[in-house]
Image (cartoon, rainbow, N blue to C red):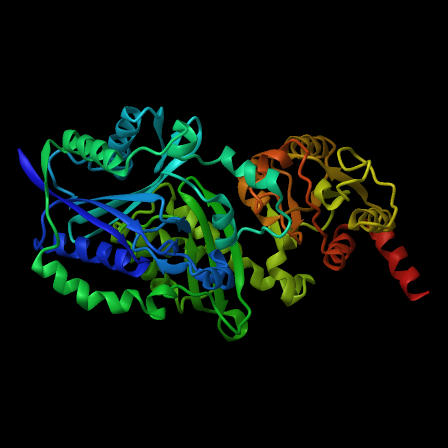
Length: 530
């Protein structure tokens, strides 16, 4: 039976724990350390962004600094996490060719999560593995996991929620909380859980570690021997720690500053993918490109390599698609759950916006306009304007149904009046099912397209659904905290989202004029000059 090291590093700072991740993986890849199961904790509390994320986009910096919450960056991908002193981390560091290790990434995730699932069941928690990398209890997440590899070795890690400080997490991560009330905070429990909530108590920490260790021993047919860091690891930690404490590491991923950037986002099976790019003079070439989000990449530097490959290329969507496909084929890089074509599509969704000013869209507003099925230049007519019910007052009698009294107390009334001026039919949409019915009806009636307003998150979630329906559309982003930002998608789906959003009325009118019947457009123009 093989022997592994059981390494319990106790409670450490965020920088120390992140530096140790790098040290353990590097040492194992060089044969300077044994196969290892590590337990770790954090003190003080911290926020850790994923390897590919931009700190400012994910973290409330002022709140964290004021409350003494450290900020750092993981060497693995995925989304931002809040760690308090009540959470337990576990890590497996071994080689890709270790006997019994699954060769495919999806199989490896299932195998490693499976050991923790069995441990939780022994503790009395009916846990289950949820592809691609979560552990859940009754549909609620209790452990998120992820990994990375280097030189034939890999590190796979997970966080186990023992107790959970919901309020602090909401304020530390960039989730709009200014209008959250107790019931919104409580609604988060529909998505996550912890040992205390499931068992009504907190098991002894040593008991939790013991059952997890025993299940990994069974999984890999090995014996765990408690030990500390090797001399090589100690030396490497002393060398690496200052870097992991530095702003250079913490802010290693940044978006463009001081220049107009083109942005897009796509939700994929493997995570949320954001694309930000800046073009050179004449919009002819890609000056810089940033791919960020809560995805995983193997090897983790592959996204940087792809960005470097595309930098300086002509701003041609066909060329970009071909280069992305060639990069993944030649490099062997993998983004679990994300196809190369989806990466190219995310980039090209942003790239096409370079021509929006020629289509009458102000340069400052190009990132607020999205299209489905056809490009913007091909959508020049639409009989309806579809508006989100969440822009109505929460107390409005029309909040939960079609129509508007045009009382002047919200943006919907103004949008209704504008739509009629341009000869368009205004409709308020309560949920995706209603939207789908309306679009299918319009398609049967031979409508050339539609104009709508929704948040970017709604489009990211339903883009494929809208493309399957097949009706071309122009969609305009909305302002304020949306149901997706507040974690209330279910309430919104049922038409019970209680926050109020606002419409970009100036841009909406510009788009109405674009798709309005010619006669109505001329009449509005004449009235404006009268």
